[in-house]
Length: 413
Image (cartoon, rainbow, N blue to C red; front, side):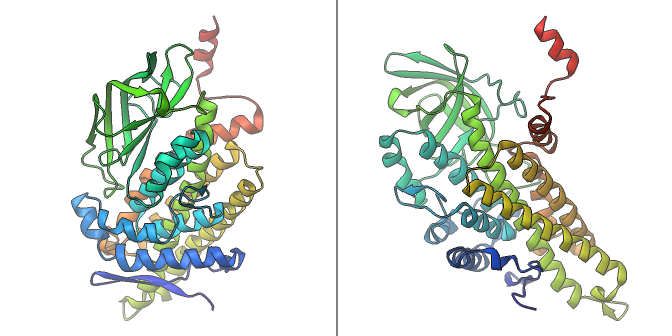
């Protein structure tokens, strides 16, 4: 069988032997996308895999690996110009999956930095803003975060309490943000706030060390421990007019960013599931119980096939979603369905993988236990399963079901 590689833990090193591409989806990729996939895989295997268990235990981020990821030219994704690679969305998605295959935290850092913060500037910024910020961000010389979620507004993100008040020469921002990825080390914050004059959401570029801006790390996470999520306090922060993103004027504009984020989160789930299956495939063939390989038992094979079937379906859905994006046909409902369905099925796949490894499935060294916890975070962020399902439900029925019926009626009285 072609393209056979697995992810095997041997002491402190991993090597790839990919068994999860059972239907040979690699054939669907362009030559450029295949080259990018190989480059990202090599960096993740050689640079990140040997240290991820250590950094997961410490809940610290290995900044020294970022230059290697910058070298493979995947940061900035589809953005053309300004030092960005201008690759296809399929290429960006495949790169995301390859990063997540080894470490979900690294993929989440890139998702926030590239697919949310950088893309916000590319989509909604001025030419001066693009020239000022994007080249450095593309090389990972500087880092960015994207601040939308608040302590009291997670799923209800359109009701932000963080405010932006127009003053002479700019804006004054006040509020709090929660779960902001990268905020403890970011040089640039993309902050979504409610305009006190229009009651619409606007976007702002806030520089680190701005007076009144403070970010603190959220401690004791069980998932995405390597990624640095934080609470962000925004108290009387002045933002000059030149740093307002003129294209963000409503939650619909924010939704365009969430669409890309959900597409990429889908590929994170695909990558995690593929990595877990590849490891399980090797482990079950090598480990013996009752004198025979674990892979020789019927119940083991049934579980492996269930995992493999999930992955083939997830990959095909993710690939089709990329093609819809490239043809400019994609909708927020389609991206939301993909995020809901892939993370749900990846969750099942990784859970089965953890079962198959027994006690070793609880160790970060064997990837599966760590992936199990990381996937819980991805299942939740960028729209929970329920919220993303309701976004798709609204699109196919014409009825919004985000608020209880009685509450919706009361608000109209």
